[in-house]
Length: 93
Image (cartoon, rainbow, N blue to C red; front, side, top):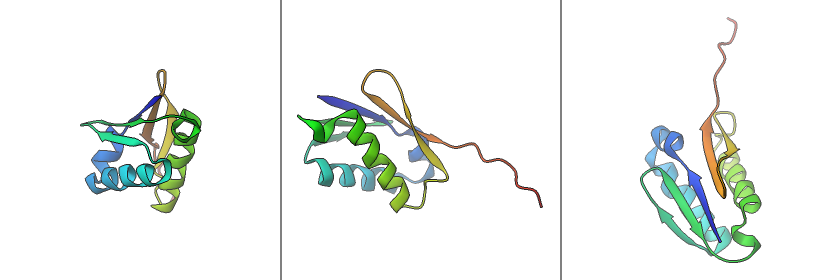
């Protein structure tokens, strides 16, 4: 089973976050992680690398890094998740 995570918008925030995310997923799933230019590929077997569990891990990672208000997780094509920057509305002053 293979799940792809589109990280181009997260990468523009901080390239260290991509490394931390890859390490976080590897530690939690024990899967093979391959980091490419704009995506992370998670390969493995069983529920540990399912799209649902990977999505949960992404949400946990964003919460731990205090980025939950800045990014959200969207579903893409088959077995693809997208880390998307949230639109910031202008606050009234």
